[in-house]
Length: 172
Image 1 (cartoon, rainbow, N blue to C red):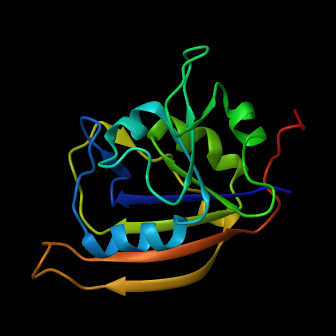
Image 2 (image 1 turned 120 degrees about the vertical axis):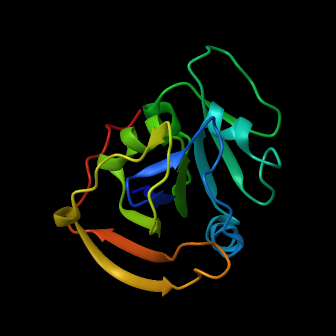
Image 3 (image 1 turned 60 degrees about the horizontal axis):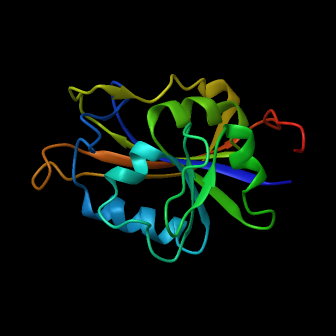
């Protein structure tokens, strides 16, 4: 079975971005993202890919979902639907969903694990993470970080594992 994990940083109001950009810059969170995803397959929408500072991200296999038939991006594996993206995921290693909002929404029912960075502040945004039903998830790890002096807000790293097997698309 393919393992699907979501990795995302969300604000108290579920905000994740504005104008195709992140809402904050947390160097330690970027290091955590790199450490967790390096050597794995990352799955994202085309707009998220376009927002990356380095494209594609090094030492990761990038699956980019687009609705443009036949579109190709050098160095990436293209997928033309959620089902197609799942078919292209790694069978033996964790696959990370890295955004954006619509991609997160579609993969939420399929995810086995959530790696959340909860930013303890409300932000103005145009992209939001879907509501999380915490009854479906078991917290397995948490690190609370106080950083008001440097960032102006605190944040927490929380890892959740789904309590029951997620929905799975039929094999394509």
